[in-house]
Image (cartoon, rainbow, N blue to C red):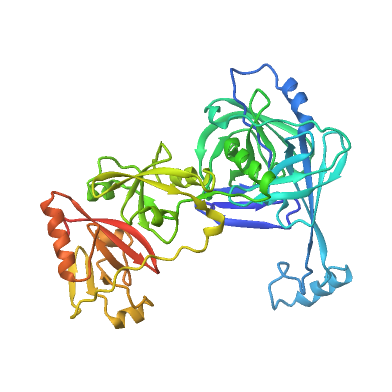
Length: 491
């Protein structure tokens, strides 16, 4: 089977980025796909296409790239043909001289005064951006702002007259099976229309804020950034990616939902950048075994693995809390919480409900700004109690040793670090299956600090006496914490 990749593509083929997954190929394309909210199969899409096509634009970008010093990519280095191809390049002016690269994409006008939405990867790194309208007229565009997290960019053109534009619809109302229509510039062929249905909702590819509508409306290279229309002519998505083994449409396309796009566009228009809410916690999903180990009634919420300095710490959120509600809305998982927090305005005071040691608590937190906090999330440090005599033990498939000064130096840990170091893992054990490895540091068991082998054995005994089938461990690797629930039937 061919490897699967998420790929940024441009029609010129000058720029290509890939993230390999497994199976097929997901291509980030310069796309314009359209999802239509259908009320039955229309006799024709012609009237709708005629009405909205003047607001759809082709986008051409131009970028200066450095010339190559040799025939890279043409012949292997050291090949006897290397000198021949270098001479050929130089003779044809393709030596070290910089050259201009062009690429094509799509977009759409959202206001009569010339604001245009497209994908960030369509214009990323471009020196010049030119907008071609349905009438054939061309205008230069300036970049107002971009958001790589959602792959959205906002452009602006200055026109002598009011421009035809389209409005955003409510993507939450788009249902699986509804008709949709895409318009754009596939493969540089000019304005083109394709139709299909909403195939799926709430798809995620690789981004933190992903909320894609999947459609089978044909989308190809050059369509990226185009609108996804419902049958009312409202934009319910911005086409961004396709799943494909060969780079062409096989009927699996992805459009960023309009309810995500509108929030981004509003911020880019007002600030020239995004301003997302920030809670200030590290989190992981609550799995069935974690829920059982913690005695939770439901497998839902976001488990707090770390609380660095920030809004959450100031409000009293603690490591091991399970966030089950944010600002009046239930939290299903970590992805849902990240989106809820990110979509909340900076500085807003919200109520956060957590489950702490089986008891529900409500905290009031004033959100910070994520963009200012990114990259400044230090790991929380434990206390400074160190057992006098380090010892070893084998339990639950793990060989554990109390953290000594020598181990702290070997593992590059801070002087105040404490816990039990995993020195070996039985490869047939559940611990190995769940990813524990030599060098991991266990700082908590059963949501209580462990600094000795005795502490760890006590936590196992307490869990068994409480009738639990697993023990919840807090494990740190390279400073990053995560919770792991280990079954108690081993060791």
